[in-house]
Amino acid sequence: MIKTKQIGDNAEDKARLYLQNQGLTFVAANIHSRYGELDLVMKDKAYWVAVEVKFRRSTLYGNAMEFVTSAKLAKIRLTFEQYLIRQGLNPASTPMRIDVIAVNSTHLDWLQNVEC
Image (cartoon, rainbow, N blue to C red; front, side, top):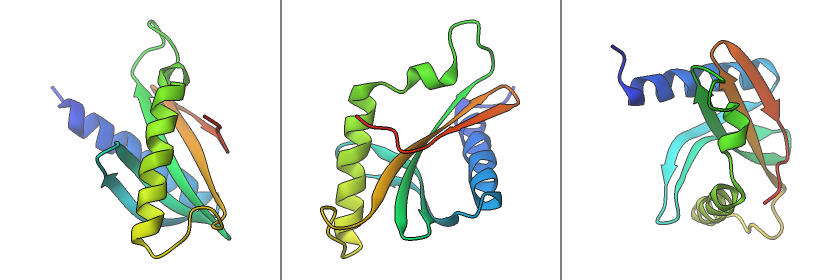
């Protein structure tokens, strides 16, 4: 049986490859702060992009996208701002957005510029 972390890592790898095929550049993965974690950090031209990856083996209990709550997005935003500051960037003047990749079994959806 595959462990939960391995399943999550596989979903993040799939999301990263998908986004790279869409023209984004990989920057970092699994960034932690006291507020939470960023699954992926990518660049899309001038934009810094925090990517939340959600995986569901089945939609029996809901679509993966449904598990990204406003509270989770607020934590991602705080973590993302802290990350940018550590990179020497000002979050107030840096083009940034939060995207969500929802992987349901083998189907992948990419929702761009998700707001809290």
